Image 1 (spheres, rainbow, N blue to C red):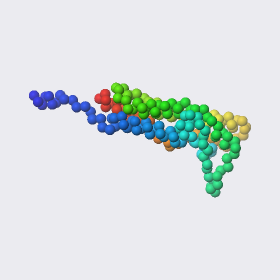
Image 2: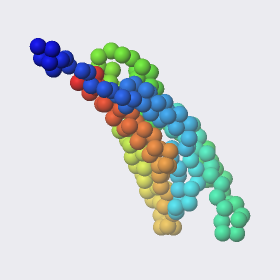
Image 3: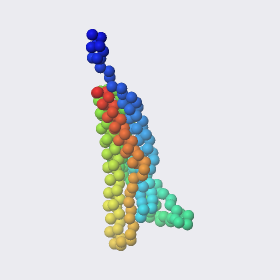
Image 4: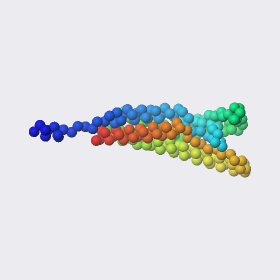
Length: 193
């Protein structure tokens, strides 16, 4: 009779560290802090000309000029037109702003203990990662359209190619948002399982 009672006792699944709210909160916090580092840079013929942080892109602040050196160690000459172009205030990027707000919201809601908190943060992490990818696509398309307008104004094919590329910090932030979503998926499965 005792063996029958012992076999009907159901033990809850062991959650471990990854089934808790701690890894997701840390991933969201790290992703939000990475917004302070350069997320994108403007390149002219493959040479970096200016960069901007994630917060700067989200709020529409000026792009900061990157000083490059040529083969002889001298600074490249930047004309006043380039300086004016980079120092103009840009419009806030709605995708970067959405990713930043979602990251902060994900960090704050990671500490909640209601039934669907893990699933909500799963979607917040996925939406934040998608917003950053959309931000990069938006910046690239704006650079491409601005480049085609400038070349048509000159009526010359001077071989100048301007592009916008994401930095490693941007890609690490996307990975952190996806990791936070994964940790929240684990958290929601442990609580429901």
